[in-house]
Length: 353
Image (tube, rainbow, N blue to C red; front, side, top):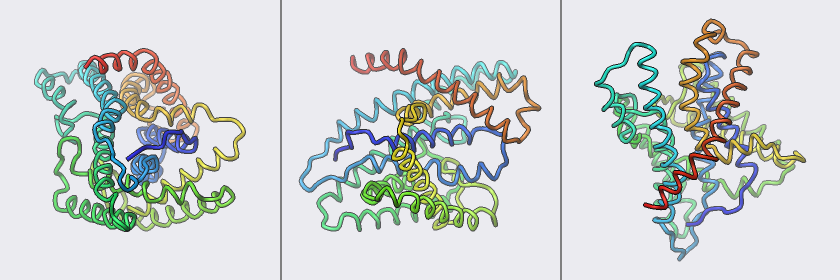
């Protein structure tokens, strides 16, 4: 199995928008309903885009699982370990500041870096990176098994349906069961990667003049599914916390919302004469931004916003824009520092091993 080697600007834009949504999802300066809208699709979108960047294996093509493992380990796991270590150090500092430090937490927090057992004392903050890594490997394995089948896309669709149905049945039976690296939600995450695989040809082959129509259609489906799914029940959709409602409506929200952002990104890329450099930079470094955001949101919420507590808890459009701007600026500075100084050092250590 091979991956697309030339970068597509629209996918960088889509991932960049996804990063902005992740940052917004960690803010508290806007109504809860907006957060529910963001959470209805923003995490599945990263898995779908990953599927769009995977090529279905040709018959007889030998995929190199070892090369994929090495490439994704360097791109995903190394940053994940690094930022989890930073979060561990920050956790110590935070507990000291808040007078909640206990020596007994030190070994539990350190083991959490490797175990990643959600919503326990052995959990880190970067669940997405670990599960994303596993989902890519699982999707690769499934595509490799199906590569010689005659009707590969039909088999992939059936596989997606089985994975999603199995996920909902499992989560309904064991809603509070959390496993290392969030393996318990791996079926859903893998399914969304496969959704990207089977929709790639349709998305990339669509005529630019129809992108606006596709955007409007995706937005309409998302709004309708969101209204039916969340308004009667309240609450939101969250993969890591097993907050699910209805299999069909959840899936419709996730896919339609993701496609809406992707087609919006296609329109921006196709009609803008100049590259949106910040957005494309955020997209190209989306995994790093995710790790940076996990650290910075804790720092900003604990230190910076401590001095503006009353103001920060107010819900207003202007304050939300200010908060978003500050977060993006801090995350970008940290990301630039990581790419310039930390990443080369980590790559040298990796090369020695």
